[in-house]
Amino acid sequence: MQWLYDAGIVNFCHCLTKPELPLEDNADNARFKVYMRDTGLLMAMLEDGAQRDVVVNKDLGIYKGAIYENIVGDMFAKQGKRLYYFEKNSRLEMDFFIRYHDMATAVEVKASANRQAKSMRSLIENYGVRHGIKLSPGNVGTIGGTVEVLPLWMAMFL
Image (cartoon, rainbow, N blue to C red):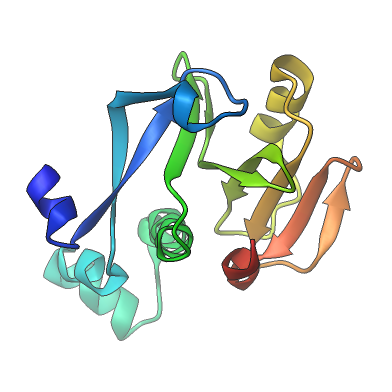
């Protein structure tokens, strides 16, 4: 796997043991997810029928969430951010954690403009996370005063 990273093909997203600063010291480097550094390569890896659905029919289907998550991960990596995520007992997962305004900030990527943020609320209530950002195709807003809702494209400004 390391050679794929060294060749500039993938980014690693390391699992946090605790969703708090310092992120690097709370990372379990043995547990990680892999994102493509080029979303076009990710699309090329899809089977032919799925590629046609995405490119010709503009139907991202079941791939929509994974594609959006990959794009955001790539944006963060291109800004020089190391990628982190949090998972607890396979029931709670947060797509990314970044250091933002000197806080460990949870970042959730959503493919729809759904205003629910169950995982985010659970992190805030049970793990002491003070700030969250939900990236979605929707407009700017807030949820409960601690979660900012931002359009997906604004990930490049975080």
